[in-house]
Image 1: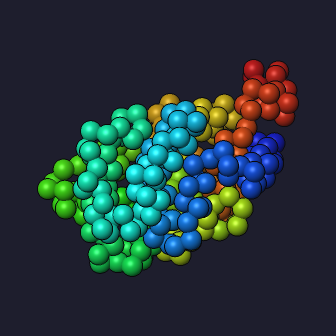
Image 2: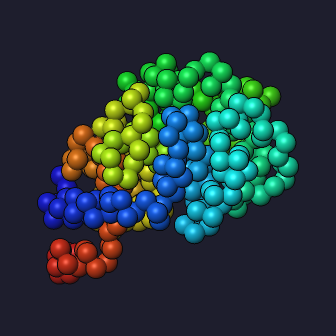
Amino acid sequence: MIDPRIASLLKSEAERINRPEFIGEDPVQFPRRFSSLQDIEITALLVASISWGKRTMILRDAERMLGLMDYQPYRFMMERGYEALDPALNVHRTFFARHLQWYLRGLREIYRKHESLDSFAASIGAGSNEAPAWTLVENMERIIRDINSGKTCAQCLPTNLRTTALKRVNMALRWLVRDDGIVDIGVWESIPKKKLFIPLDVHAGNTARALGLLDRKANDRRSVEILTEKMREVCPDDPALMDFALFGVSVKGELDRIIPRNQNDK
């Protein structure tokens, strides 16, 4: 069981961070610019794919990536505009235009047969699976790999599904599925929000460990599963809401405030 003081802290931090003011400082702002489902979900996946490193760089490079697609990602993809890109063009850190081409080429194949990625997720039963992100990636990656002559692209979709935390895909799903009308967009119907997982990165992992929510050192799939189960104790119907809490907690100060130091040292 989670310490009631920790649970209270998580709830208050989630409420503090999950506000409209957060949007302008977060990559979620990019899919929120669009009104069509297809543009929203394509942008969510692509922007999430480059969401690692300094936040200012992520925002800068996401803007540039959308510019490469003429700010019309669905049309750009369906008209194969990606084929005209220089494969060596750098998009974000180790993510290049050749990776964007791989992703869009494969996504186009999915859209040729499905109206949206949401309908694709429904067709593979992602929402009825206990691990929807991993089910989605397994099926997407197979199709995208096949249309790319068997080539994989770890910068876009991990292939080590038994161990990967799928942080970036879980973040994109949080944007697409959660529907409280504040920060996240909530345009998908195929996956219930109660089945979402925490997008686990270094920051979230370190915060969870400092709060006593996670003992394992690795930020891997098993740690995501353990941490998400803890968050379901706090918010059973919407565990991914606690992603905002992990982002917002100032670990040292808050821990000292709610748990006296002599108790922490026991």
